[in-house]
Length: 310
Image (cartoon, rainbow, N blue to C red; front, side):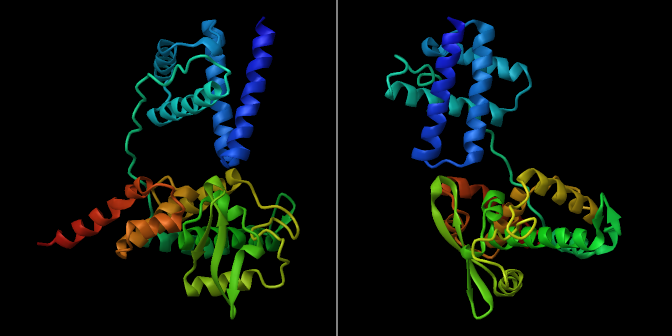
């Protein structure tokens, strides 16, 4: 009976993830997270000797309590409950369960996070550290200094692009030459397929546009912008985060900065220039204006500076 339930759940989980990816258009990252969350739910059910098809609201409440006792943070708990809400809603609609155990449970609130971003001085420090090549050795792991220098310059372009366009790291790494619109030697915009397979055009500042246009000169339309080698694929997001951390440490910046924080930095600079939230929403590819409103902190920062010397 246990094996039958196991096979049944695994097949249903596979079908659900297919629904998320191919019907709802969710990203690979979202599908990966949902798959992980469902696995945690299933393991807890096994330990509690419960059948996923006949769970009660009290079972979900006990699961949430278990996660909290295990030290899982509020954001992660809220995401897991959101995953289960979507899963059981889909399962009930497809007659896989009789009742939805999540529907009647009060959902845990996600605590409001204040975004981390770089101040202008910190952006300058990061750029200076990135362009200082003194730390690149003559040879490391069989790689020549010239090769390591090309890697540094590729990351320099990547991090600059995110700060000038607000792209998600997955969007930036997925860019191909054909996605860049070049006019008279200037990259005017990039075409991005974001969350939910929604397409948007993101304009670029002219000075950076010239640099970007030069970087793709001679490349084929199908080539990835940040390919590790001609015709190859780009580095993974994990490698990108690790490289950025090294540069942040080198720059002496006392913040935990990820590529997503560079996206926050872009949004913050826009808000400081009095760009409307609805326009920032369009540039970032947010589905809801509520998501964009987390950046209103920048306006408060600017106002605080204005009255500081009164």
